[in-house]
Image 1 (cartoon, rainbow, N blue to C red):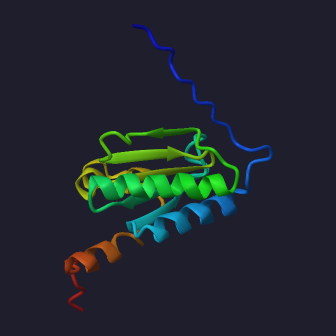
Image 2: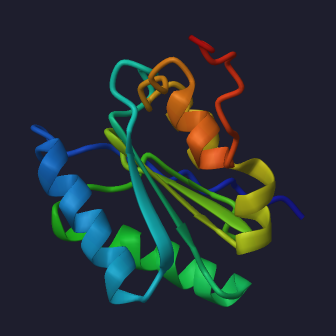
Image 3: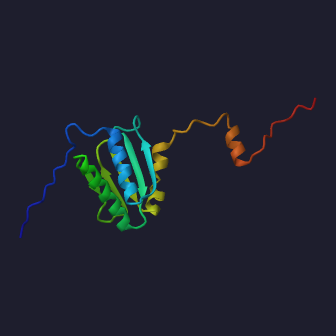
Amino acid sequence: MTSQAQVIKTCLPNPPPPVDVLLSTVLDAVAEIKAVDVVEIDVRGKTSVCDHMVIASGTSTRHVKSIADEVVKFAKRLDCQPLGVEGEREAEWVLVDLGDVVVHVMLPRVREFYALERLWTVGDQPPADDGADARAAAGAHDLAPRDAG
């Protein structure tokens, strides 16, 4: 018995919603369903894949899936169908690709393991002023010789 594959066509509206409107909609969606530790990262200039990433945690696989579903629902209100949704079956990490905004919803242990925030923000902080701030934060003392005279 043979069945035909189901083809799902997705596309962004023409013209797509402004990036700030799409990002705001995504943040509203994750807040609505009470996502945990929501972080928005501006990745313009770091990748051509998207302009912003939103990373959020869910408290269970069911919560992760519900957050992703809410993001899709809110995006559809803008007439914006996702370009892709991956990971819904296992729901430990669900990725929702909305074009200019990519949303990662993860279980906390998965999020900690992959550390996407660290990956995409490396080099964003200015270097410490000749190490003095780093030493002070670590509680180190200045061990430079003192002038006896």
